[in-house]
Image 1: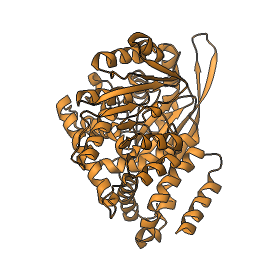
Image 2: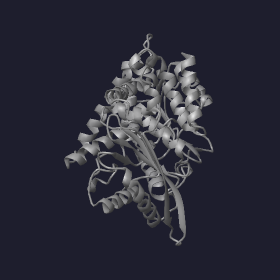
Image 3: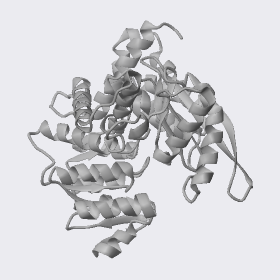
Image 4: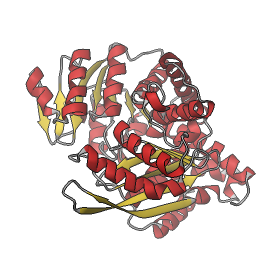
Length: 446
């Protein structure tokens, strides 16, 4: 089996040099499902995984735009259309200086399994640009988005590819992108999700990833007749996912101890309550200040240039970015009694960190399952757009809870080990794979 896996990974490395994030994502999935594939001739003999790791299409394009000084700026745009076996391509757009082909292929590959797990008819894609919206005026962001969409519109559509937001792409950017798309094609349709509630968006879309993460953690804890109430929680990040995960933790009686940004983290042993969280939302969403301002206001500890994983907790929620939690962090979490690690970000735990969690047999929930709430509500927005109808906040929230519960059940189907331990990584990967693989087989070699 090791030889089969090694041969597969060597082939992927030779075809994708210089793409570490993508190679890491493929290795994580392949390592956990190769044994399963080898036991199923219909997958093994048709080279389904070999086909799945190849994008159906990659579009790379130039994005020229004028800044407020009248100077020409040039960025690079991408759209990776990864897999359309179970529906039109679906996945966010990321605007950040770190964006490159490797990052987007990794995210698009993860999206295959994430979208499959939701049970909704969504294929997988991802896109974005190395454009940085931070520090840009609304006019500059609009100019960039209009130029970006002037090329992207050729490759997307409500039945073809439905992008959403991601890092650096919020309501403002989605609005500018949608406006330009509508202007070019002359049609108001559901080509983008994450729209404003007044013009086709869904209730609780901003909250969905963070809320869904906690709903998934609740399902995990229920397997031990436990709940999040009374648990100490450490959270990384202070953006959208972190904010709403913290909000749902507080609502359910947990104590949130930490939040962070790219400069460091705050540790509030008294707990971040509703009032303090509202301050963080204003700080990060309105004034865009550093998290250390929280420490000054509420007289708590701030750790410059560090991550929050040294703080003793029951539940750890890495919600910032990929590879933010390594094996050393993982060992410390386990040593200090952490019982559950659930990923709100995409691939925030390194492979060595995941190995530590699995060896210690603590609950580890990979992002493709735990943070699928965001794309799930995007899928619900697609349905509402198709029906020219909108559901209430309560209706969408109930549907989100149901989807996260169903994702958990799908993970149990393939993740339960003989000793009763639930390997959510294996369960999520195999369950997500099977649905897409069966669809690919049904549609032939295309």
